[in-house]
Amino acid sequence: YLRLARAMPNTPALIGKGVSGLFADPSVDQSGRLNAERVLNAVGSILWLQDEAQIDAVTAISGSGPAYVFYFIEAVEAAARQLGFDEPAARKLTMETFLGATQLAAQSAESISTLRQQVTSKGGTTEAALKSFAVSGIAAEIAQGIEAAALRGRELGDSLGRDAGASGHA
Image (tube, rainbow, N blue to C red; front, side, top):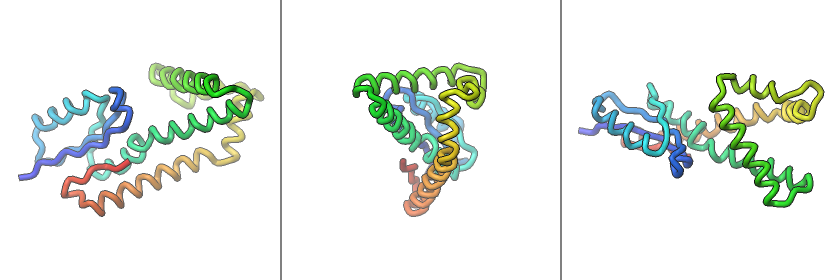
């Protein structure tokens, strides 16, 4: 008799800062759910899913998400070097900015949109960058990329046989 719980952790689990999407089919009792929670809470937080198909979306958002963040960090570091900073200075400016902004967002009761607006002065430097991003369609491209990741997750799940216990693949 097969009882199945599926999880999609992400690489920040390596430092205890991961987030895992977790789904348990109806055959998993409360004790089994608590055991799954205990294992995954050891490496970060969890989000219980109501539908197994949501694992594909979790894979696209948080499973692959660290790569999206690293990609953006790479781009900002490269821009800092183009503006004349050496490698160590570019990395420090970029990493401290990302760490601080992420921690501020996590601790703030304000929405992400409000936090962004608070940094964006009318006619200022931030507004110039955000307008350039908007013209380039960066937000739409990010959404399209994440949808492609979710689709690929569904394809992988289907090819490996969901009922055989296939896991998400970032």
